[in-house]
Image (cartoon, rainbow, N blue to C red; front, side, top):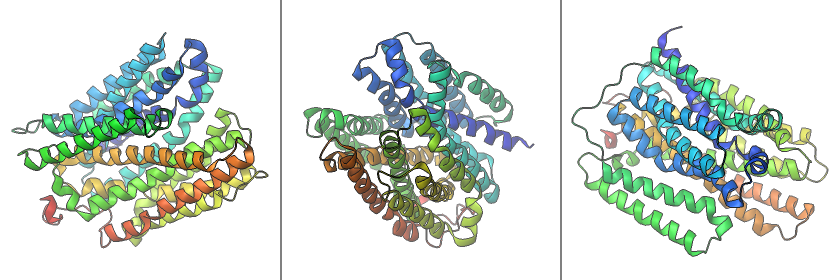
Length: 467
């Protein structure tokens, strides 16, 4: 096998680890709580600490990779993530575990954007790159569903520590493959880090992510949450001013004039809104209405994830045939149909009644994978890292918005603590989610029209705003 496919193996496995740790902890929390005597706040921060650091530093991680070299930042991120995973697995107190989870998020914020940029740099041929992105997307899709199942199996049958310690052998394998396969890093000479841009963007993302995570518990009108939203707005406005005046900005704001780049990010955001939302609230439905255990609920999503992964591998070929815009729009439309179908589930429904809609949803979600290649390919090569970071920020923020907005709607709709009231609220929430994701269909058709799908965009062919 040629070395570039080994590069793909390394970055796919690394991304799998980081995505897995985004949701592997949830089903193991009761076991961790009993073992460490966690407080309620401690339970929340085991999950939130990782997401906060990950989402807050994605842009910074991407830009550091652009400046200091992809190989260097990949290995730094991998080392930080693997070492902190071991610390989390061996933690004997909630403080140690929370600290390790935060450091895990830092490592993930370095690895994830660097991985996509490495694919862009390694696969020069457009069709090969599209195939590589499809495989990378398939592995990422598997991580979303395997996380809860893995967390449940390991915490129930071995020890909760192994949901983190399992990253050690995977990290070692990734490091060995990467050491042999990754090309040497080339630091961009004459380019400096936009420190004010890094700090202001990270502060904005930290504050926004914190507000979205803690809003339900603290109250959306509490001073802490309103202050966090205000801080995010001020920091973001400051970031825009800094970037517009900087000679070497962290991210060139002219990128957002490209309809392919901006429309692609919005379409990917709609995907994340639907995927994160349906995983979170349908997991509650499986446990509350159908009596599934947390592990069984996690296993219930595996068929969806497997189909999503399979479609992700072949979706670039479909995009080449019919165009990226129609392909992405069709994928979002299938997700909308699935959510509308799931909204018809009731008290007498069984898992087999849900399974066809799960599969339709998985097929639709897998069809959006070509978007990743289109977004990364729409920017100059020396900006691939920060573009990848922007793409992942879109996924994280819209995913959190999906959980937050749909959760607020569900809670407002549920008028009594009964199963009938929960089902009514669940069905209504799914319809609202479908309506929001539906917005992505015309966006994709407009923004990605006449797009050459996965064909390489040369310097001369790029949108004038990007050169």
